[in-house]
Length: 473
Image (cartoon, rainbow, N blue to C red):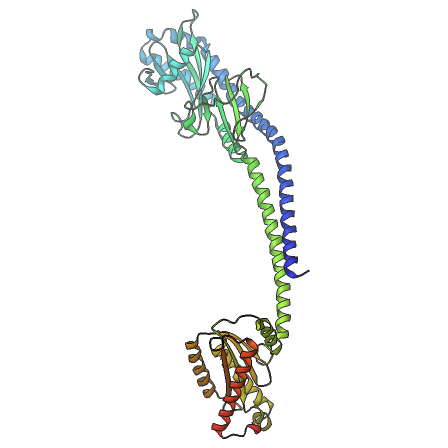
């Protein structure tokens, strides 16, 4: 099996393994996520319920106690008979004792007769539900007919913290309305818990009333402005946890809070499961890429070793050029191919090598061969491949335009003429050229014969012009 087939099958096996492992992991995760999400939502709902009930149970009791306090009822009944300052003084003392003694955020009384808003600091204002939006809570509560209710505020007493006002209805012995009293408690633990759980578990936590109107939300813009109509509140028992599947892969767990007469809703949008899916996919992709990287490195190392061994067998060590074996392989490859118009075959032979070897030693001869190889590479290297095909014989197969070839030939002659070695003072190289444009019907073998003939002709001309004996050189 060759290298390409091995690589192909290795990639196929890796991809199949990746897809299989990812599919199994996602399927298993989906089953576990469905099972765990419902239980997790119930646990979160129970935890939130306990904290809310713990924070509000005492304020509700206090508000109910105030509404039935005989001192407060009597004071409200005789309020108009008292001087305003006297009434304010009595209420100030009474409310300060509750607020400071129980560490509440606020304690208040609103008179139905005078509409005075009493606080531990005295008369805070005269409420006007008809013209002042913030005072409309009063008329809403009175019209509701409830003995007590809760109202969430996040601006009046503290800009950032939730403050829940527990409102209690005050009546005299005949049932006539005297006003509203109560306390304001900062929901510190609940607020921190809401934010923490929403951040850690990617859920939304809200309190809604029986009309689905949002009463408590970490997004203040939703409080008493938005509805959760899709939540099913019908026939929800006091201790019941209702699990409900919503659209877009969302779920909700709802529980009724008796003391508040509100519903606690914990919604999950499925991002936990989606996040886990994404983590599994990313992990599998990381493993897949790691395997691919290792595989590519292994193939590259093997390929490099193969190429290195192959190149070693095709290279001429003294010059760094390709050897005769590489030359013959390339000729065989081109033998039956049509040669491109710009194909040029060059044969080159070093003159005077025998004389240098005989008179100056083989190191001098090697210097001539190395010098010729360097000049050939410098002039023709970027156009094609250079081979050393004999002791002093070189060949070049290249692609070069006719006009450019003339320039390169001239440069080669200049480089050769100016060359000077340490042991040999001059270098002469005879060359023969044959190109496919000049001989379009010839193949590589025929071009090589033509180039050989021209090279030998050039060599004869060199010896005639130099006066040297060719047989001695």
